[in-house]
Amino acid sequence: MNILVVDDELGLRHTLTLILQAEGHTVRAANDGPDALALYAEHRAHIKLLITDMIMPTMTGAAVAATLREKDPHLPVVIMSGVADDAMASGVSGDQVMILRKPFTPDAFIRKATDAIAAVSPRVPPSRPAALRA
Image: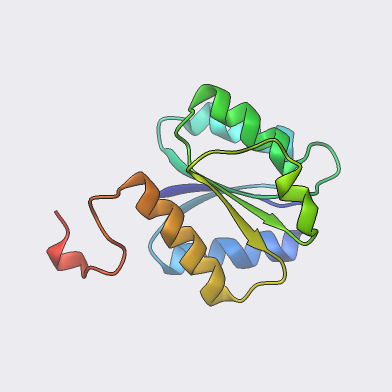
């Protein structure tokens, strides 16, 4: 699955990219909101999940999510936040918006990404072996 990861912290963005690639996903990584919007415009047909930090200098993760969901209202979103009220105050809502509180472990990150992916493909439970997936 193609995933767009947005985070202004290079080290975290790189780590998240490696974790997702190890799980077999293709990752487009952006360092801020405008970069994310440009990548989405270029790869819109392929991006199936947005994972974004909430607090970034040029554009919040909530603004990125809201802008992309105007183009694709069903785009699943995972918002990473170290501040409890940020995600709740973001104005981004819906069945396919999930919050991941910082700090988190790689396992918690993969679980949240897997849950978001399952929201895209509810007919394929994430716990089923690949050989059994239809």
